[in-house]
Amino acid sequence: MTDEDDQVPAPPDDDHRGRGGGGAAGRRGSGGASPWFGGDLLAELFANPLEPGYAAAARRRARHPESPGQRRLGVGLRVVSLALIGFLLITAYRQAVAAQPEAGRAKAKLVEDVQERRTETDGLQDRADRLRDDVARARDEALAGSGGLDRRLKDLETVTGLGKVQGDGAEVTLADGPPPVDPVTGKPAATNPGRVMDRDLQDIANALWSAGAEAVAVNGRRLSATSTIRAAGGSILVDFRPVSAPYAVTAIGPGDLDRRFADSATGKRFRRYADQYRMQFTVKRQTGLTLPAATEPRLRYARTVPSATPTPSTSPSGGGR
Amino acid sequence: MIAVLALVAGVVLGVVLEPTVPLGLQPYLPIAVIAALDAVFGGVRARLDKIFDDKQFVVSFVSNVLIAGLIVYLGDKLGVGGQLSTGVVVVLGVRIFSNVAAIRRHLFRA
Image (cartoon, rainbow over all chains, first blue to last red):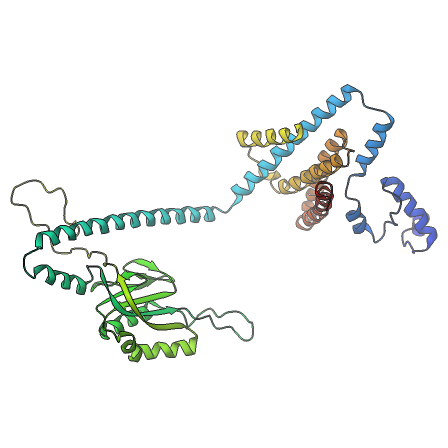
């Protein structure tokens, strides 16, 4: 104990350094200049990470070369332990993957499902659009030369949103403002008054209609008389399909539609919002707009007319049960 | 070459056998992996320094894994398992880093 007592405090005088340093360096087999153990453990760790045993083994081998039997045994051991390491790595990897929370995996699966279904509906929608085009073409052919009937039908389709329309008009773009920052904590506030709500899009669409628009679409989804703009959770749904910011409400109408809208009460209100909540809001005149047809409304009461010949109907009405 | 093959064979074996880790050993698995990586990188560095030794490698692998596991086990019993695990990871991480740095100097001379 007394012997230790005069060594442990390790005053940095040359005598102790010399003795301790020499001993440590000798034991570790590192090259000489290793200082006394005390405060330099980390430096030592950084400077000399290699197992000193490797150097010692190399020196030993230089003195007594290995026999072939020893070599073979060594290689065998090396192979076994490396295989063990590979096994360990893959086991740990599998373990980590398995430890991923059950909820997270379920959610990923759900997201996958949703995406799958969405592409499926998109494909079906495409097909419906194509078929509708076919029907429209066939009808046009049938009505050709019926004197004004096809024109009237076209006009009706434009008004009800069932036909594709082209023309000049206005585009209103709207995007969320940044959430206000709490001046004390510096964190964004939980509620953001500059957030675009379903009500806002409804108001803009209605204001555009009343400013004389003939066709209105939100983010490329045409509105018809029975369209809905609703909120579900945090997102806005137009005809039950989600739309995301920035929202672009395009409308075809008279040449001064943009001015008329901007001068309307709704337009003024949104300009005030833009000033106050830094919501992004612009009204622009647009030329050459093309708005797609709205999704076909479900037929609620109408049924297909039973054909004169009593053949079993293969296509029940779309809105039927 | 033979080393890489052995490593791959181990991985394949693990994939094929699909071992389940007993619940009691699960906390030691990450530590064992770090310790094994330390041994591997130490071996690679020694190889590049041309002083690789099979016995040394095997001993360092086994003892690394055992000692790391033992430290964590001891820490668990003493109620400082998390801190000791962190300590083990830091020390082995530093060693891995500087070994990889040495390997990099060997391979790229930079």
